[in-house]
Amino acid sequence: MFRIFGPPGTGKTTTLLNMVDDALAAGTHPHRIAFLAFTRKAANEAKERAAERFGLDAKKDLIYFRTLHSLALTMTDIRPEQVMQDANFKELGQKIGVSLGAAKNTSFDEDMPSVVSGNDPILGLINLARLRKVDLREQYNQSNLEEDWNTVNYVDKCLREYKKGLGLYDFTDMLDQFVSGKNTFRPEFDLCFLDEAQDLSPLQWDIAHILDDSSKRMYCAGDDDQAIYRWAGADVDHFINLPGGSETLSQSYRVPETVHHLAENIVRRITRRFPKRYEPKPERGKVQRISHISSLDMSEDSWLILSQAGYQLQPVASDLKSNGYLFTYRGHRSISEKISEAVNGWEQMRKGKEISGDVARKIYSYMSTGTRITRGYKKIPGLDDKEMVNLQDLRVNYGLLVDDTMIWSEAMDNLPEIDRAYITAMLRRGEKFNSIPRITASTIHGSKGGEADNVVLFTDLSAAADNAMRINPDDMHRVFYVGVTRTRQNLYIVEPEDATRSYDL
Picture 1 (cartoon, rainbow, N blue to C red):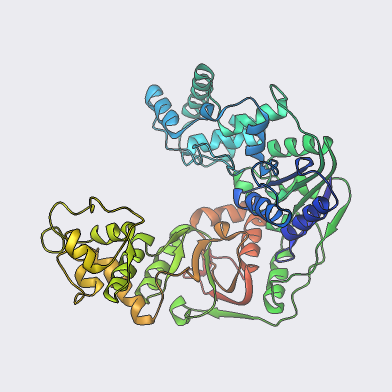
Picture 2: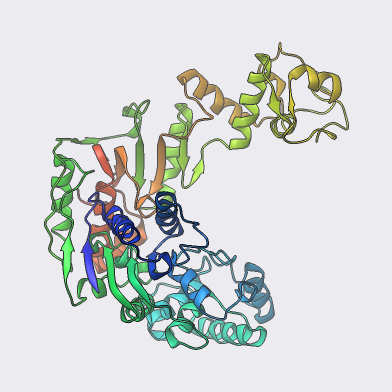
C-alpha cells in the first residue's frame, strides 16, 4: 500500500484523479479501477470527471467509484430493504422502553457516507465501539455519557436481537460482513485508490487491507495533520504507521505565506504526526486579528466563517442577516429558494415577463385568500407546473386579485416578517438574493475540503472541547490547522470572548 501525503491545497485528490485518467488512457478497463472515498461528494466527483473525459457511463462503467459503505453493501448479499431505517430504531425504542433518537443516514443511499454515527448518544456509542473494534464497556468508560452502563448494555443486546429477528442490518454490519467474507464477493483490481485515509476507523482499515491484498497496486491518500474525526472512530495512527513507500505533495496552491507560517506554528504542536515538507504558494496573504465580525466588509469575494462549535455561529448568522448578506449557514441558504423564487418571480411579472406555474404556486402560497387571491385558487387548479404565464393570465384565469402596482412586499402579505425584513436589507445592500451565496458559516469540521478567499476564524472553545483539549491536545491542534488552511488570501482571527477558554493562535 503506497501512501500519498497531501497537506492542505496541494492537490491530493486531483493527483489521484489524474492517476485514474492515466490508467483509463492506457487502456485499463474501468471495472478494474476502484476509487473509494470518505464522502459521497468525493466519490461522485471522481466518477463524473472520469465519465466526462472518456465518454463513459458513470453508473455502468465506473461501478467501483463509491464510498466504503456503498462498496460493502454492493459486495454482500444485503439488500437495500434490509437496511435499518429511522422507523426501525423508533420501534425498537418503544418495544424496550428506552427513548432512542433517530440515527444519522439510516435511509438507504447507494453512495452513503463512510462515517455513520447516531444522533442518539446510546446508539452512537454502540456504533463507535464497533468501528473502533473495542469492547463496549471500554468505550463506555472512556465516554461522558450520562446514561448508566446497564441501560447501554441493555440497548446493545436488544438491538442485536431486533436485527437478527427481522433479518435487518445497520451500516456497520455491512462492513463487518465484508471483512468476515460471509456471503461476500471480493473484487480484484488493477488499481485501487483510497482517498482521505486518515479518517478511516480500525474496522474500515480492515477493509482497506483486504482490498490491498486483492489489488495489483493500491494508493491511499490523506493527511494525518488534518485527521479531525477521531471522535467518530478514525485511527490516524494506523495511517501514520503503515509500512511501505510514500510520497508527499509539498507545494500548496491555496495557502499564502503569512497564513502558511501560522499553520506551521500550529502543526509543530502535534506530537503524533508524519514529518513532511510543505511550501506555501508565492503570495504574501494577510493574517489580521479583529474584535468583532461587524468590522469586516464582505460585499465581495468568497468568505468562510468558521467556529469550533455550531452554537457559536448563531449570533454570526443574526449579524449577517441584519447587514443584508446572503449566506449559507450550516449547509442551508439563509433565505429559502422557495421565497427567493417567489419574490423574484413576482417582480419579473411586474416587468411583463412570464413565469412557470410552479413559481406561480410559490407566490400564491404567500398570499391571503380573499384579498390577494380568490377562494379556491390557492393551489392554482388547472395550471401545469411547466406552463408559462404572465400576471394578466393569472388575473383572468387563476384568481389573482392584485395588479402590477403592488411590489413583492405588498402582494405577498403572508410572507413572514422576519423574511420580509431580511430581503429588504439584502436589496438595500444590492445583494442578489437568488444567486449562489459567496459567504458560508460553518463549523470547522463541516468546512473540511472547502476553501475561500477570506476566512474568519473564531478561537472560542466549547466547554466540552476545552476539556478534551486538556486530555488530548493533538485533536484540537488538528482542528484549528484545518480551519486556518482553508484560506486562499486573508485570514481574520476573531479575538475570543473568554481568553481562558480559547485556542491560542
